[in-house]
Image 1 (spheres, rainbow, N blue to C red):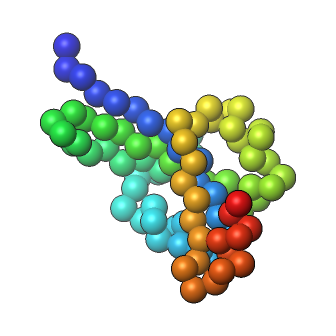
Image 2: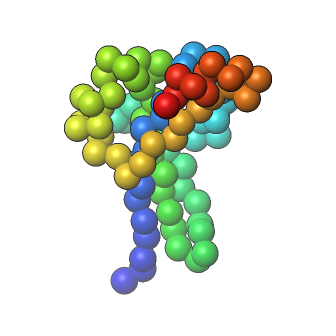
Image 3: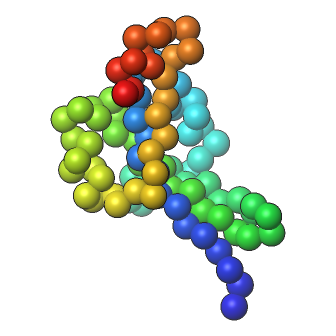
Length: 88
């Protein structure tokens, strides 16, 4: 049996921090997530990324329960210190 991995991440960050740019090479799935399959160290790996669309503060707990992510990707603007501080 061939080994593969499937990871789920929630994408967090304010509008204008590059979340859409980060996902432009990903495919849209029927569940509304963005997906990319790649080979890493000889193992097929599928990344599913769910964008909270800038509403992290109001729906983060709900999205986490629904998606059950393996991790979080936090985007911020390197030229805007406040966007980094708000990610905390």
